[in-house]
Amino acid sequence: MVDPSEEPKIESYYRSFSAGTTLYYAGSPAHELFLIRDGRVQLLKRARGIERTTGLFGAGELFGEEALLAGAYRSATAKAIEPVTALVIDSDTFRALTRNRPDLGEAVMKQLVRRLRLAEEQIESFLLPDPILRVLNALLTKLEESDGGLLSLSPLELSTRTGLDLDQVKAVVGQLHDRGYLQVGDQTITIDDASALRDLQQLLVVKDEVRHGLSCRYTDTPS
Image (cartoon, rainbow, N blue to C red):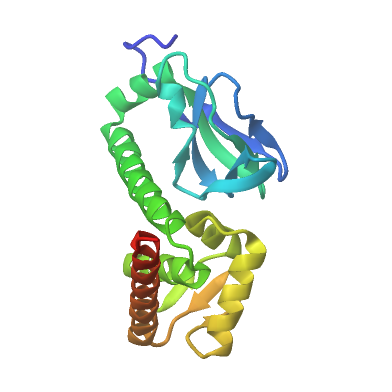
């Protein structure tokens, strides 16, 4: 327990983890939250015997925030996919730090708002049966967040955003590349003509709506 009258020294709470280290397991008690300074961490959840990435976090991002709730348990497993340095603090220490560092509390709130928006995006994506449309939605959303047509976006991040496995993501990105909609680099995607990508998205949306409408009419037709 941190004495509120004492200002915690934030540097003393940084810890380092080597690539491949499991920071915590799904189902374990949630005692600490993590704010990454360097490296990347993925959250993994097993469903129907298949382990999928449900979150991917890098420098400046927060995860493990369920530790702020008393008696909470981890909903996913956290694993370092490259060397990681992170601020690791329990809920009492976090509250003491934010009293003395209001900017830290504000940064965490912004992170949680972005997390909520990403969760909404993922839910909308999971409802789409067309994997190409899922990838297009994720690319265009990421494009809106960036300043230009060059996106720092790995296949793993696209997989997380769309709910597709890596092979599906790579296949769709390959198709879009072959058709000239984007260029693919090392962990980057370049979109030269965003309007063409949006036109393709709208076309697929219309096709999906028509297909869904025809399906509903067929289902509702009396026998």
